Length: 129
Image 1 (cartoon, rainbow, N blue to C red):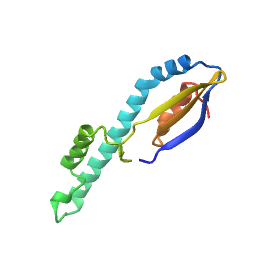
Image 2: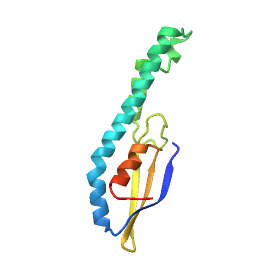
Image 3: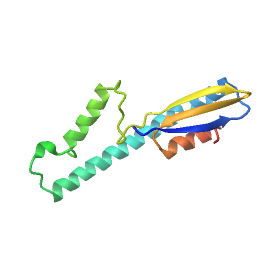
Image 4: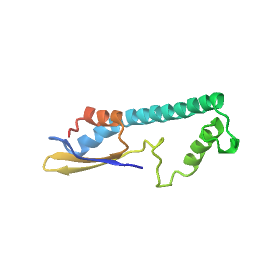
């Protein structure tokens, strides 16, 4: 997975407790955004698979990576192997945040794929670049 590490996010004049409270408050929105992003990726894969099925003839149907069964199999594999540290760029929207107090402010490092709604949510919580 290509990880974007944003350095320099800061919440000025805040305690660690205040920053964590804001992050807890926006967590459901993060989950909702990640679910929407994953659903969009799955819908694109299925639509592409249907388009291929209508316009393209595969010699070996077992190698059809865009069929409904194959896409569902990928989801099931990801669910069964949640401890796998090798992430896929296709639908991995997992992120993590590290915060630490520093001279009356709170600094933050974020680790996630480049997904604009995540950055917007962090900014809404009061963290700036």
